[in-house]
Length: 488
Image 1 (spheres, one colour):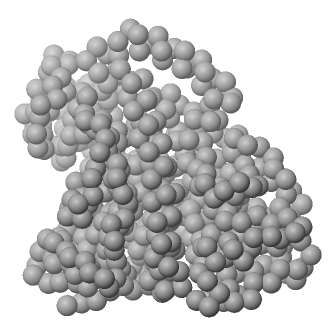
Image 2 (cartoon, rainbow, N blue to C red):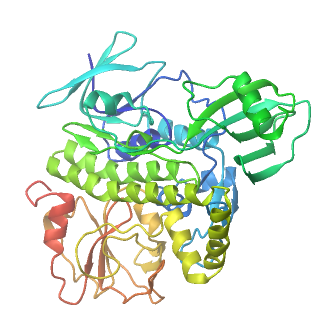
Protein backbone atom coordinates (compact mmCIF):
# COMPACT_ATOMS: atom_id res chain seq x y z
CA UNK A 1 0.00 0.00 0.00
CA UNK A 2 1.37 3.38 -1.06
CA UNK A 3 0.98 6.21 1.44
CA UNK A 4 0.46 9.94 0.88
CA UNK A 5 -0.59 12.69 3.24
CA UNK A 6 -3.45 13.71 0.92
CA UNK A 7 -5.06 11.92 -2.02
CA UNK A 8 -7.14 13.99 -4.44
CA UNK A 9 -9.62 12.25 -6.72
CA UNK A 10 -9.93 14.08 -10.04
CA UNK A 11 -7.38 15.98 -12.13
CA UNK A 12 -9.73 18.68 -13.38
CA UNK A 13 -9.09 22.36 -12.59
CA UNK A 14 -10.16 22.04 -8.94
CA UNK A 15 -8.09 18.95 -8.22
CA UNK A 16 -5.03 20.33 -9.98
CA UNK A 17 -5.25 23.67 -8.17
CA UNK A 18 -5.62 21.95 -4.81
CA UNK A 19 -2.64 19.71 -5.55
CA UNK A 20 -0.54 22.76 -6.36
CA UNK A 21 -1.57 24.52 -3.18
CA UNK A 22 -0.64 21.51 -1.06
CA UNK A 23 2.65 20.97 -2.89
CA UNK A 24 3.63 24.60 -2.23
CA UNK A 25 3.17 23.81 1.46
CA UNK A 26 5.45 20.75 1.12
CA UNK A 27 2.62 18.29 1.65
CA UNK A 28 2.93 14.81 0.12
CA UNK A 29 -0.07 14.91 -2.21
CA UNK A 30 -1.12 12.66 -5.09
CA UNK A 31 -3.98 12.69 -7.59
CA UNK A 32 -6.05 9.76 -8.86
CA UNK A 33 -7.47 10.42 -12.34
CA UNK A 34 -9.56 8.08 -14.50
CA UNK A 35 -8.33 9.66 -17.76
CA UNK A 36 -5.08 8.27 -19.15
CA UNK A 37 -3.94 11.75 -20.21
CA UNK A 38 -4.93 15.36 -19.59
CA UNK A 39 -6.77 15.43 -22.93
CA UNK A 40 -10.34 16.64 -22.64
CA UNK A 41 -12.99 16.05 -25.27
CA UNK A 42 -15.26 19.02 -25.91
CA UNK A 43 -15.03 22.71 -24.98
CA UNK A 44 -16.79 22.67 -21.58
CA UNK A 45 -15.90 25.76 -19.51
CA UNK A 46 -14.64 28.65 -21.56
CA UNK A 47 -12.80 31.09 -19.35
CA UNK A 48 -11.62 32.62 -16.12
CA UNK A 49 -13.18 35.43 -14.12
CA UNK A 50 -11.31 38.23 -12.37
CA UNK A 51 -11.04 36.69 -8.92
CA UNK A 52 -9.70 33.44 -10.34
CA UNK A 53 -7.10 35.38 -12.32
CA UNK A 54 -6.20 37.14 -9.05
CA UNK A 55 -5.65 33.88 -7.16
CA UNK A 56 -3.50 32.58 -10.02
CA UNK A 57 -1.60 35.87 -9.82
CA UNK A 58 -1.13 35.21 -6.10
CA UNK A 59 0.77 32.07 -7.09
CA UNK A 60 2.80 33.70 -9.84
CA UNK A 61 1.20 31.77 -12.71
CA UNK A 62 -1.46 34.17 -14.02
CA UNK A 63 0.66 35.21 -17.00
CA UNK A 64 0.70 31.62 -18.28
CA UNK A 65 -3.06 31.79 -18.69
CA UNK A 66 -3.20 35.36 -19.92
CA UNK A 67 -0.65 34.57 -22.63
CA UNK A 68 -2.76 31.63 -23.83
CA UNK A 69 -6.20 33.28 -23.86
CA UNK A 70 -7.99 36.43 -24.90
CA UNK A 71 -8.68 39.21 -22.39
CA UNK A 72 -12.03 40.98 -22.63
CA UNK A 73 -15.26 42.02 -20.97
CA UNK A 74 -16.76 38.53 -20.84
CA UNK A 75 -18.85 38.78 -17.66
CA UNK A 76 -22.49 38.12 -18.38
CA UNK A 77 -25.77 37.65 -16.55
CA UNK A 78 -28.58 35.83 -18.40
CA UNK A 79 -26.95 36.81 -21.71
CA UNK A 80 -26.61 40.49 -20.72
CA UNK A 81 -22.97 41.52 -21.17
CA UNK A 82 -21.54 43.49 -18.22
CA UNK A 83 -18.58 45.84 -18.42
CA UNK A 84 -16.46 45.53 -15.26
CA UNK A 85 -13.56 47.71 -16.40
CA UNK A 86 -14.31 50.29 -13.69
CA UNK A 87 -14.04 47.82 -10.79
CA UNK A 88 -10.96 48.32 -8.59
CA UNK A 89 -8.74 45.35 -9.44
CA UNK A 90 -5.58 44.89 -11.46
CA UNK A 91 -7.52 42.32 -13.49
CA UNK A 92 -10.72 44.20 -14.33
CA UNK A 93 -11.64 41.78 -17.12
CA UNK A 94 -12.23 38.13 -17.85
CA UNK A 95 -10.20 35.68 -19.88
CA UNK A 96 -11.61 33.60 -22.74
CA UNK A 97 -9.72 30.30 -22.59
CA UNK A 98 -11.06 26.77 -23.18
CA UNK A 99 -10.99 24.35 -20.24
CA UNK A 100 -8.70 22.06 -22.21
CA UNK A 101 -5.99 24.71 -22.13
CA UNK A 102 -6.73 25.72 -18.54
CA UNK A 103 -6.18 22.12 -17.45
CA UNK A 104 -2.99 21.72 -19.46
CA UNK A 105 -1.45 24.85 -17.93
CA UNK A 106 -2.41 23.75 -14.42
CA UNK A 107 -1.13 20.23 -15.10
CA UNK A 108 2.23 21.62 -16.24
CA UNK A 109 2.45 23.67 -13.02
CA UNK A 110 1.58 20.65 -10.89
CA UNK A 111 4.19 18.61 -12.77
CA UNK A 112 6.81 21.27 -11.96
CA UNK A 113 5.84 20.81 -8.31
CA UNK A 114 6.46 17.03 -8.68
CA UNK A 115 2.93 15.92 -7.78
CA UNK A 116 2.34 12.29 -8.85
CA UNK A 117 -0.83 11.52 -10.81
CA UNK A 118 -2.17 7.95 -10.88
CA UNK A 119 -3.74 8.00 -14.33
CA UNK A 120 -6.15 5.53 -15.87
CA UNK A 121 -7.46 4.54 -12.46
CA UNK A 122 -10.67 5.09 -10.56
CA UNK A 123 -11.53 4.88 -6.87
CA UNK A 124 -13.65 1.81 -6.24
CA UNK A 125 -14.14 2.30 -2.49
CA UNK A 126 -12.60 3.78 0.60
CA UNK A 127 -12.80 3.36 4.35
CA UNK A 128 -11.75 5.90 6.92
CA UNK A 129 -10.60 5.40 10.50
CA UNK A 130 -9.29 7.65 13.26
CA UNK A 131 -5.93 8.24 11.56
CA UNK A 132 -6.56 8.08 7.84
CA UNK A 133 -8.34 6.76 4.77
CA UNK A 134 -7.70 3.54 2.83
CA UNK A 135 -8.48 3.92 -0.87
CA UNK A 136 -9.01 0.97 -3.23
CA UNK A 137 -8.28 1.63 -6.91
CA UNK A 138 -9.63 -0.02 -10.05
CA UNK A 139 -6.25 -1.57 -10.96
CA UNK A 140 -6.18 -3.55 -7.73
CA UNK A 141 -3.75 -1.25 -5.95
CA UNK A 142 -4.51 0.72 -2.80
CA UNK A 143 -3.48 4.01 -1.25
CA UNK A 144 -3.41 5.27 2.33
CA UNK A 145 -3.85 8.96 3.11
CA UNK A 146 -4.47 11.16 6.09
CA UNK A 147 -7.17 12.94 4.04
CA UNK A 148 -9.11 12.20 0.86
CA UNK A 149 -10.55 15.02 -1.25
CA UNK A 150 -13.22 14.38 -3.88
CA UNK A 151 -12.78 16.69 -6.87
CA UNK A 152 -14.46 14.12 -9.11
CA UNK A 153 -17.33 16.10 -10.58
CA UNK A 154 -21.07 16.37 -10.22
CA UNK A 155 -21.59 12.60 -10.17
CA UNK A 156 -18.91 12.32 -7.49
CA UNK A 157 -18.33 8.77 -6.35
CA UNK A 158 -16.51 10.12 -3.31
CA UNK A 159 -19.51 12.21 -2.23
CA UNK A 160 -21.89 9.30 -2.65
CA UNK A 161 -19.64 6.82 -0.82
CA UNK A 162 -19.18 9.30 2.04
CA UNK A 163 -22.98 9.45 2.43
CA UNK A 164 -23.10 13.21 1.96
CA UNK A 165 -26.53 14.40 0.83
CA UNK A 166 -26.85 16.46 -2.34
CA UNK A 167 -30.09 18.45 -2.06
CA UNK A 168 -31.30 21.02 -4.54
CA UNK A 169 -33.57 21.57 -7.53
CA UNK A 170 -34.44 19.12 -10.30
CA UNK A 171 -34.07 20.03 -13.96
CA UNK A 172 -36.67 22.13 -15.78
CA UNK A 173 -34.79 22.43 -19.09
CA UNK A 174 -32.37 20.24 -21.02
CA UNK A 175 -29.84 21.03 -23.74
CA UNK A 176 -27.69 19.03 -26.11
CA UNK A 177 -24.27 20.51 -26.80
CA UNK A 178 -22.10 19.15 -29.58
CA UNK A 179 -19.18 19.59 -31.94
CA UNK A 180 -20.11 18.24 -35.36
CA UNK A 181 -19.87 18.77 -39.10
CA UNK A 182 -22.89 19.99 -41.08
CA UNK A 183 -24.11 19.91 -44.66
CA UNK A 184 -26.27 23.05 -44.37
CA UNK A 185 -25.01 26.24 -42.73
CA UNK A 186 -27.08 27.27 -39.67
CA UNK A 187 -27.83 30.81 -38.59
CA UNK A 188 -24.77 31.69 -36.54
CA UNK A 189 -24.93 33.19 -33.06
CA UNK A 190 -27.24 33.06 -30.05
CA UNK A 191 -30.97 32.52 -30.43
CA UNK A 192 -33.95 32.80 -28.08
CA UNK A 193 -37.31 31.62 -29.40
CA UNK A 194 -40.48 29.87 -28.28
CA UNK A 195 -38.56 26.60 -28.06
CA UNK A 196 -35.80 27.89 -25.77
CA UNK A 197 -32.23 29.07 -26.27
CA UNK A 198 -29.84 27.81 -28.94
CA UNK A 199 -26.43 28.68 -30.34
CA UNK A 200 -24.24 27.95 -33.36
CA UNK A 201 -20.61 28.94 -33.83
CA UNK A 202 -17.71 28.04 -36.07
CA UNK A 203 -14.87 26.28 -34.26
CA UNK A 204 -11.17 26.75 -35.01
CA UNK A 205 -10.94 23.20 -36.34
CA UNK A 206 -11.72 23.05 -40.07
CA UNK A 207 -15.32 22.10 -40.73
CA UNK A 208 -16.41 21.77 -37.12
CA UNK A 209 -19.46 23.55 -35.76
CA UNK A 210 -20.23 24.04 -32.11
CA UNK A 211 -23.93 23.94 -31.35
CA UNK A 212 -26.35 24.06 -28.45
CA UNK A 213 -30.03 23.23 -28.80
CA UNK A 214 -32.82 23.09 -26.22
CA UNK A 215 -34.57 19.73 -26.06
CA UNK A 216 -38.35 19.79 -26.03
CA UNK A 217 -38.65 16.96 -23.47
CA UNK A 218 -36.94 16.33 -20.16
CA UNK A 219 -37.32 12.56 -19.96
CA UNK A 220 -33.92 11.68 -21.41
CA UNK A 221 -31.39 9.45 -19.70
CA UNK A 222 -27.72 8.86 -20.41
CA UNK A 223 -25.46 10.44 -22.96
CA UNK A 224 -27.13 11.73 -26.15
CA UNK A 225 -26.50 10.28 -29.61
CA UNK A 226 -26.24 11.86 -33.03
CA UNK A 227 -29.85 10.77 -33.59
CA UNK A 228 -30.90 12.64 -30.43
CA UNK A 229 -29.14 15.77 -31.70
CA UNK A 230 -30.79 15.43 -35.10
CA UNK A 231 -34.23 15.04 -33.55
CA UNK A 232 -33.73 18.03 -31.22
CA UNK A 233 -32.60 20.28 -34.09
CA UNK A 234 -35.48 19.18 -36.31
CA UNK A 235 -38.02 19.83 -33.56
CA UNK A 236 -36.81 23.43 -33.23
CA UNK A 237 -35.62 24.43 -36.71
CA UNK A 238 -37.39 21.98 -38.99
CA UNK A 239 -34.00 20.65 -40.17
CA UNK A 240 -30.98 18.99 -38.62
CA UNK A 241 -28.63 20.83 -41.01
CA UNK A 242 -27.25 17.46 -42.11
CA UNK A 243 -25.25 16.96 -38.91
CA UNK A 244 -22.63 14.24 -39.12
CA UNK A 245 -19.19 13.16 -37.90
CA UNK A 246 -19.53 14.32 -34.26
CA UNK A 247 -16.37 14.68 -32.21
CA UNK A 248 -18.31 15.31 -28.99
CA UNK A 249 -21.94 15.23 -27.90
CA UNK A 250 -23.18 15.84 -24.36
CA UNK A 251 -26.26 16.90 -22.45
CA UNK A 252 -26.73 19.31 -19.56
CA UNK A 253 -29.68 20.67 -17.62
CA UNK A 254 -30.45 23.37 -15.11
CA UNK A 255 -30.39 20.94 -12.19
CA UNK A 256 -28.88 22.74 -9.21
CA UNK A 257 -27.58 20.85 -6.17
CA UNK A 258 -25.14 21.45 -3.35
CA UNK A 259 -23.52 19.07 -0.89
CA UNK A 260 -25.06 19.39 2.56
CA UNK A 261 -21.56 19.16 4.04
CA UNK A 262 -18.15 19.77 2.47
CA UNK A 263 -16.48 17.54 5.01
CA UNK A 264 -17.26 14.14 6.50
CA UNK A 265 -14.45 13.17 8.87
CA UNK A 266 -11.30 12.80 6.78
CA UNK A 267 -13.14 13.13 3.48
CA UNK A 268 -13.68 16.52 1.85
CA UNK A 269 -15.36 17.75 -1.34
CA UNK A 270 -14.48 20.58 -3.70
CA UNK A 271 -15.60 21.89 -7.07
CA UNK A 272 -18.45 20.19 -8.92
CA UNK A 273 -18.40 17.34 -6.41
CA UNK A 274 -19.73 19.92 -3.93
CA UNK A 275 -21.98 22.01 -6.18
CA UNK A 276 -23.55 21.80 -9.64
CA UNK A 277 -25.66 24.35 -11.47
CA UNK A 278 -26.57 25.71 -14.89
CA UNK A 279 -23.43 27.01 -16.64
CA UNK A 280 -24.70 30.48 -17.52
CA UNK A 281 -22.34 33.09 -16.14
CA UNK A 282 -19.39 30.68 -16.37
CA UNK A 283 -19.00 30.35 -12.61
CA UNK A 284 -18.55 26.60 -12.05
CA UNK A 285 -14.86 26.12 -12.83
CA UNK A 286 -14.00 29.42 -11.17
CA UNK A 287 -15.85 28.53 -7.96
CA UNK A 288 -14.03 25.20 -7.86
CA UNK A 289 -10.59 26.75 -8.25
CA UNK A 290 -11.41 29.20 -5.46
CA UNK A 291 -12.62 26.29 -3.29
CA UNK A 292 -9.19 24.73 -3.74
CA UNK A 293 -7.34 27.90 -2.76
CA UNK A 294 -9.45 28.22 0.39
CA UNK A 295 -8.96 24.58 1.38
CA UNK A 296 -5.32 24.00 0.46
CA UNK A 297 -3.51 26.03 3.13
CA UNK A 298 -5.92 24.94 5.84
CA UNK A 299 -5.52 21.26 5.01
CA UNK A 300 -1.74 21.67 4.88
CA UNK A 301 -1.64 23.07 8.42
CA UNK A 302 -3.87 20.29 9.74
CA UNK A 303 -1.69 17.64 8.10
CA UNK A 304 1.40 19.24 9.66
CA UNK A 305 -0.46 19.34 13.01
CA UNK A 306 0.24 23.02 13.47
CA UNK A 307 -3.51 23.68 13.45
CA UNK A 308 -6.37 21.56 14.82
CA UNK A 309 -8.65 19.58 12.52
CA UNK A 310 -11.43 22.02 13.42
CA UNK A 311 -9.77 24.53 11.07
CA UNK A 312 -11.22 22.43 8.24
CA UNK A 313 -14.71 23.34 9.44
CA UNK A 314 -14.03 26.89 8.28
CA UNK A 315 -13.70 25.54 4.73
CA UNK A 316 -17.37 24.59 4.81
CA UNK A 317 -18.51 27.68 6.71
CA UNK A 318 -16.76 30.00 4.22
CA UNK A 319 -17.20 28.24 0.89
CA UNK A 320 -20.67 26.71 1.27
CA UNK A 321 -22.38 30.14 1.36
CA UNK A 322 -20.38 31.23 -1.71
CA UNK A 323 -21.59 28.30 -3.80
CA UNK A 324 -25.13 28.74 -2.44
CA UNK A 325 -25.03 32.28 -3.83
CA UNK A 326 -23.83 30.92 -7.19
CA UNK A 327 -26.74 28.46 -7.27
CA UNK A 328 -29.13 31.27 -6.40
CA UNK A 329 -27.92 33.58 -9.16
CA UNK A 330 -27.95 30.80 -11.77
CA UNK A 331 -31.54 29.95 -10.83
CA UNK A 332 -32.38 33.61 -11.45
CA UNK A 333 -30.53 33.58 -14.78
CA UNK A 334 -32.40 30.48 -15.93
CA UNK A 335 -35.67 32.26 -15.18
CA UNK A 336 -34.55 35.28 -17.19
CA UNK A 337 -33.58 33.11 -20.16
CA UNK A 338 -37.12 31.80 -20.62
CA UNK A 339 -38.75 33.01 -23.82
CA UNK A 340 -42.39 33.76 -22.98
CA UNK A 341 -43.81 37.28 -23.22
CA UNK A 342 -43.76 37.88 -19.47
CA UNK A 343 -40.10 36.94 -19.24
CA UNK A 344 -39.28 39.15 -22.22
CA UNK A 345 -40.92 42.07 -20.41
CA UNK A 346 -38.85 41.26 -17.33
CA UNK A 347 -35.71 41.15 -19.46
CA UNK A 348 -36.42 44.63 -20.78
CA UNK A 349 -36.62 45.99 -17.23
CA UNK A 350 -33.52 44.02 -16.20
CA UNK A 351 -31.61 45.48 -19.14
CA UNK A 352 -32.54 48.99 -17.99
CA UNK A 353 -31.36 48.24 -14.45
CA UNK A 354 -28.08 46.73 -15.61
CA UNK A 355 -27.50 49.83 -17.70
CA UNK A 356 -27.10 51.76 -14.44
CA UNK A 357 -23.68 51.80 -12.80
CA UNK A 358 -24.53 50.48 -9.33
CA UNK A 359 -26.57 47.41 -10.42
CA UNK A 360 -24.07 46.63 -13.21
CA UNK A 361 -21.11 46.79 -10.84
CA UNK A 362 -22.90 44.74 -8.20
CA UNK A 363 -23.81 41.91 -10.56
CA UNK A 364 -20.41 42.01 -12.30
CA UNK A 365 -18.68 41.69 -8.91
CA UNK A 366 -21.05 38.85 -8.02
CA UNK A 367 -20.33 36.83 -11.17
CA UNK A 368 -16.58 37.50 -11.07
CA UNK A 369 -16.44 36.69 -7.31
CA UNK A 370 -14.81 39.99 -6.44
CA UNK A 371 -17.58 40.53 -3.89
CA UNK A 372 -16.80 37.43 -1.78
CA UNK A 373 -16.82 38.29 1.91
CA UNK A 374 -16.11 35.66 4.55
CA UNK A 375 -17.83 36.40 7.84
CA UNK A 376 -14.91 36.87 10.25
CA UNK A 377 -16.83 39.13 12.58
CA UNK A 378 -17.33 42.86 12.88
CA UNK A 379 -14.56 45.28 12.11
CA UNK A 380 -12.82 47.06 9.28
CA UNK A 381 -14.39 46.56 5.80
CA UNK A 382 -11.23 44.70 4.71
CA UNK A 383 -11.85 41.92 7.24
CA UNK A 384 -12.83 38.74 5.40
CA UNK A 385 -12.49 40.30 1.97
CA UNK A 386 -9.81 39.89 -0.70
CA UNK A 387 -6.69 41.94 -0.12
CA UNK A 388 -6.15 44.52 -2.88
CA UNK A 389 -3.00 43.96 -4.94
CA UNK A 390 -1.25 47.15 -3.85
CA UNK A 391 2.15 48.37 -5.02
CA UNK A 392 3.98 48.92 -1.73
CA UNK A 393 7.43 50.18 -0.84
CA UNK A 394 9.57 47.94 1.35
CA UNK A 395 13.19 47.65 2.46
CA UNK A 396 13.55 45.21 -0.46
CA UNK A 397 12.25 47.79 -2.93
CA UNK A 398 8.83 48.16 -4.56
CA UNK A 399 6.71 45.01 -4.33
CA UNK A 400 3.21 43.96 -5.27
CA UNK A 401 1.19 42.35 -2.48
CA UNK A 402 0.29 39.36 -4.65
CA UNK A 403 3.98 38.77 -5.42
CA UNK A 404 4.52 38.24 -1.70
CA UNK A 405 1.88 35.47 -1.74
CA UNK A 406 3.59 33.35 -4.40
CA UNK A 407 4.85 30.89 -1.79
CA UNK A 408 1.31 30.48 -0.35
CA UNK A 409 2.52 31.65 3.07
CA UNK A 410 0.54 34.08 5.26
CA UNK A 411 1.64 37.70 5.19
CA UNK A 412 1.56 40.35 7.90
CA UNK A 413 2.04 43.81 6.42
CA UNK A 414 2.94 46.57 8.87
CA UNK A 415 2.13 50.05 7.58
CA UNK A 416 2.88 51.63 10.98
CA UNK A 417 6.22 52.45 12.55
CA UNK A 418 8.90 50.05 11.27
CA UNK A 419 9.61 47.27 13.75
CA UNK A 420 6.48 48.00 15.79
CA UNK A 421 4.98 44.52 15.27
CA UNK A 422 6.29 41.39 16.95
CA UNK A 423 4.93 37.92 16.14
CA UNK A 424 7.37 35.84 18.20
CA UNK A 425 6.47 32.12 17.93
CA UNK A 426 4.77 32.58 14.55
CA UNK A 427 7.83 34.20 12.92
CA UNK A 428 8.79 31.06 10.99
CA UNK A 429 5.29 30.56 9.64
CA UNK A 430 4.12 34.08 8.87
CA UNK A 431 5.95 36.61 6.71
CA UNK A 432 6.28 39.96 8.51
CA UNK A 433 7.13 42.94 6.37
CA UNK A 434 7.25 46.66 7.06
CA UNK A 435 5.74 48.55 4.15
CA UNK A 436 4.67 51.99 3.02
CA UNK A 437 1.70 52.81 0.82
CA UNK A 438 0.35 56.30 0.18
CA UNK A 439 -2.32 55.51 -2.38
CA UNK A 440 -6.05 54.83 -1.98
CA UNK A 441 -7.50 51.68 -0.44
CA UNK A 442 -10.51 50.74 -2.55
CA UNK A 443 -12.76 47.68 -2.52
CA UNK A 444 -15.29 46.55 -5.14
CA UNK A 445 -18.82 47.80 -4.33
CA UNK A 446 -17.63 49.49 -1.13
CA UNK A 447 -15.28 52.10 -2.51
CA UNK A 448 -12.58 53.85 -0.50
CA UNK A 449 -11.89 52.55 3.01
CA UNK A 450 -9.79 53.84 5.88
CA UNK A 451 -6.10 52.87 5.46
CA UNK A 452 -5.20 50.23 8.06
CA UNK A 453 -2.11 50.32 10.24
CA UNK A 454 -1.49 46.61 9.55
CA UNK A 455 -3.16 43.68 7.79
CA UNK A 456 -2.80 39.93 8.21
CA UNK A 457 -3.36 38.26 4.84
CA UNK A 458 -4.13 34.56 4.64
CA UNK A 459 -2.52 32.42 1.90
CA UNK A 460 -5.80 32.57 -0.06
CA UNK A 461 -5.50 36.35 -0.21
CA UNK A 462 -8.30 37.15 2.24
CA UNK A 463 -7.69 39.48 5.17
CA UNK A 464 -7.78 37.72 8.54
CA UNK A 465 -7.03 40.71 10.80
CA UNK A 466 -6.86 44.47 10.45
CA UNK A 467 -4.78 46.49 12.90
CA UNK A 468 -5.24 50.00 14.17
CA UNK A 469 -3.01 51.96 16.50
CA UNK A 470 -3.93 49.66 19.41
CA UNK A 471 -2.98 46.45 17.48
CA UNK A 472 -5.45 44.43 19.54
CA UNK A 473 -6.44 40.91 18.53
CA UNK A 474 -3.34 39.95 16.53
CA UNK A 475 -2.28 36.96 18.71
CA UNK A 476 -5.85 35.65 18.63
CA UNK A 477 -6.01 35.92 14.83
CA UNK A 478 -2.63 34.24 14.44
CA UNK A 479 -3.76 31.41 16.69
CA UNK A 480 -7.11 30.99 14.93
CA UNK A 481 -5.65 30.73 11.45
CA UNK A 482 -2.08 29.56 11.89
CA UNK A 483 -2.03 27.49 15.05
CA UNK A 484 -1.34 27.94 18.73
CA UNK A 485 2.04 29.44 19.75
CA UNK A 486 3.44 26.10 20.94
CA UNK A 487 2.48 24.50 17.61
CA UNK A 488 4.22 27.27 15.71
